[in-house]
Amino acid sequence: MATFTEEAGHWPCKCNDCGHEFHVVIRLIRERKYRVTCPGSAHVAGGLSMVVSQSVFDDQLEQTRKGLFDPYAGMFRLSPPDHAVYLIGTSHGYQVEGQAPAGAFSGLIGSYLDSVPVGLIAEEMSLEGLARHGAVASVCKRLAESRGLLHRYCDPDMATRSSHGIQALEPIILQGQRSGLSDEEIARQVRELAYDPREQYWLAQLLEPDRWPILFVCGADHVDSFAEKVRALGRPVMILERDWAPPVASPSAQPNRLAP
Figure 1 (cartoon, rainbow, N blue to C red):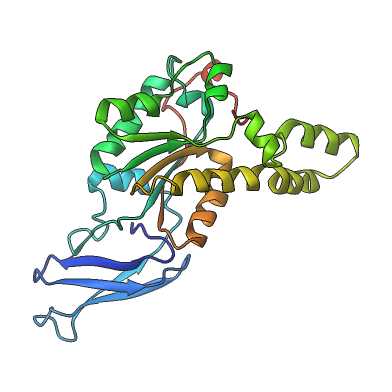
Figure 2 (cartoon, rainbow, N blue to C red):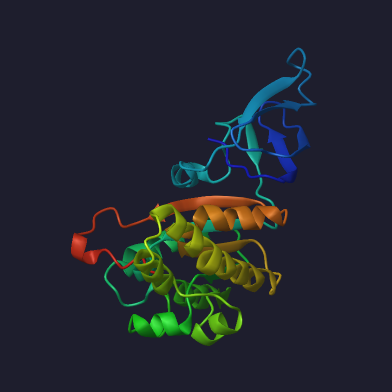
């Protein structure tokens, strides 16, 4: 399955049939298909064509294991853009060093770092969040240190949230329930008052170091909305994991999904 995002810009391609190298320049929009023609395929009447379909990346992990960014099954090889953001959605407990599921999560992140050229590892986590889990470092922080990569905790602490007008999740929900608001209205308030401003803060934290590409880990509830914010800046996004969990986990091993 092809793995593209909007505003892809110039994509270098190589035709494995004739060896011709060329660029594709298109704006990719969800669920649309485009036909890419190799201009050097003189051996095929009218040129060699291939339909490129942009998807919501549900099969990205399988594609990665088979050979990252070789989505055309031998027809073309696509190189990822330099300024891409790779997203991994999960539950926050898996990010924390020292917890049982963290070993599996470390293996997942390590496998992606072996395949994806990353300049920055960042995550929805803070030192306060780690302390609430009884930890001093995250899995991503330790992996970044071991590989000599830049790492950044992007989630604001309580003082920063207050100064930026970012409201806490639980009071919004409780107040909405006490006021008799519908689930839809409560969800809208959570998005507007808590999630959106936090995601904007994460985005500023990602852009400030100017180190690319970026691997960013966040809660599964934020994957799609945060991806849209990145795309709005013209940056390509690839969702590697929409809601990662260990292959086998008992109910007691499932961490709390609430934001750190």
